[in-house]
Length: 393
Ligand SMILES: *Cc1c(COP(=O)(O)O)cnc(C)c1O
Image (cartoon, rainbow, N blue to C red; front, side, top):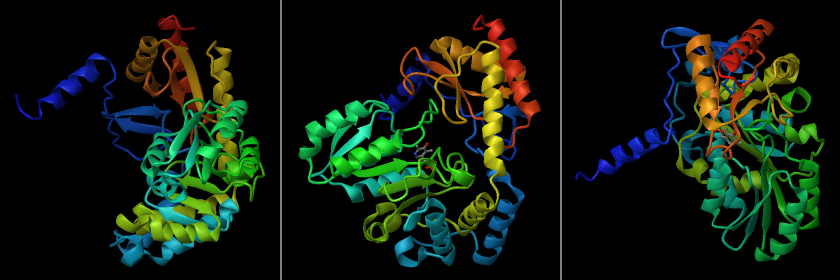
């Protein structure tokens, strides 16, 4: 027996259980259509909500920044890696979000891993929503704070947990995704902010699927609910609707100042590259001046949902463009996705247990502002043929 034989066994086990995920390789830029294995496929599963990942102005901003500043940041932010582009992006994000200050990091996952342990430690308590993103779960683990899970969207349960466990920590933090990525529903942030006030708990929202989607000009969930000043920490990503790469945290100036002293991805991992930083600045400028992409996204989402419902599909409880096509059975869902891929040239990912509870398998569709109505009609027709073939509709 070799020392590494367990790796092969583990892979085989994943394959046997049908949980081994093949990695698709794209041979083109992100967009409504992408090339995979030499074939043009309708892309229904990217988070590039607004098409900014391949927007000509955003591309140009990245190229110009590379010409001027080169490709690498050269160091961690706290030594020699902070470039004036980072400062400009941080000012822009704070203004866009209506918060005092922002800190830019290399990704949304790192923003959560780095920020949560600065806010709470082993003498504190975290109230974490049941369906929170993996990066929040890991950030809470790293913090060593006591963790109390409250039920999805259930404010009675959150209050019950606060009553019972608030005393378990010196400081307390309520943390939630803003938009839940598997169902497209929205956290009841006004109620959460009130409970935070009532029980002296900080409120932290992860707006990864809200930026560029919710609020005026895509300013996100805090703007959507008009909660400026009532949410303590707004974390976000530059890698989804913004179309680039990176993450950020917004809050009061002193919090951002403290993060610059304590946040480990800021101190121990090299800074975001100049090209990405300049591209993110441009993407936000585009959003500020014009909300037509955001409007197109919502219009497309409504068209897609209605089209699927009209042919007999259940599109779940989504309140955002995220469109889960609820199938239920795991095997049927995987079969439908395969059929769409191989016979209809529709690229749409199946989401099955353990990502979602058993018996709630679905295909999650992500419409974007760069899809045309014809593209969406193409997807709906494909779902109709494939669904009939498999006896789903
Ligand atoms: C995608 C996502 C992240 C991670 O963001 P990256 O910038 O891709 O690292 C964090 N939180 C949520 C809720 C997400 O959906």
